Image 1 (spheres, rainbow over the protein chains, first blue to last red):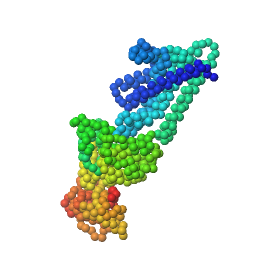
Image 2: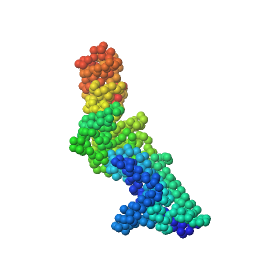
Image 3: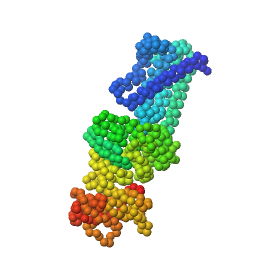
Image 4: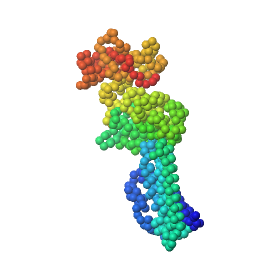
Length: 231
Length: 359
């Protein structure tokens, strides 16, 4: 079975992915709503910028994070001087890197499900006296729930698998930033056969698969409740 | 009191609507594309006119000269759309209650129990909208708008998307609502039977312009309003009350300003008010009073107007105490010498008279 070291690696990975998604989600919902429901100058640019992590090499994302959030970085130095808070070389940095890489996936899924909502229903809510905020909280968000859910799971799975940006930004430190992919990478550097690699790979696949199946089942149930049929 | 005076251009189409109306039901009538929905959307705050003003109950909701534009959620105006637009994830009960927290409406509207009773939706409260029939959905949508206690209720062809069975299922509910609620209603329709059933005031629209505004009986008797008079089922609305019942022959006598009409028996007690509608093509004209005729209603009157027409038929407005419209062939007009000022008798077949609204 799994060794204590492997269990530590897995829990670290889960913790990193959990915080990455937890902090990413509200921002992703806000970004998705802005992109789906508002028009503002420079929207195309914002849209493009949000999707950058999907298309640029992860090492570039990691490097950019280092420049911005490293202890000497533009934002990182302020955070450290004022709050004593640092992303550098610990699991919080790994969570930031994972979160940034997974963000576009979350935004995309949520945005699509917001765009699929009939805006006339939201209009009806406004004629019933609901403010924009109330319309969002009582109509838009509940109806976008399947998308929010699948975006979250997708982002979670993506965070678990994050490699390039993490290793560039916060290096590969056992117990701090060595998540499952980084551990597999390290093990592969060692000569000889290694069962630990296989076990970690299987655990990764199992967690990702379980997450996807769970989200699919939940989102079907929600859709069924709303529309009366399983899509 | 509702005052609407707005201008807005949409490409080549220009909306230039102007009307005032008071309590009761105001119908906006016009063919598709006449600008009806644009007007109610502007009243609800869903679109912004280029210029003008909209005042409801003394409050300016929109006034271009004072740069006032209240957002829809602050207007206190209920809106029943063509489609039900129910919230699919909320039960009927929560749909109905959605607007009840609002503060911008007036506070003494009907309560929940009254409205669900009136609309007959008690047994549906815990269902989700997808489990309702089209007619039930639209009833819930009406209830939801009413329960938000609006200062004004807008209804944009609420029956247009229903098949005729469902329409007739909802009509009585709507009629009851229009009668029992103290909220003024603006009712958009191109269906004459709906308008004559509910409306007190009629606004006729044509290509974005208001052609005429007035009482339904007055407007439906006019010859100059193309959208109304050019219809095959053009006709006049008469408001009257039940004067007597003839149980032997199953007939009812209705008195109205122009005299009495005998029609097939209807429910109601003597003194009940009701509205009748007589289609122009169901009225014949005689220059002398004929004997031995099956027609029970022979009303003496004077021709006030004859429409210009090169078609087979012409429309004639007759003053029998109130104006009514008759449609006869152009040949008859020529051969009988029917012209304004002529005293004639209008023959109205009893069985052709429709009751437009319940007492």
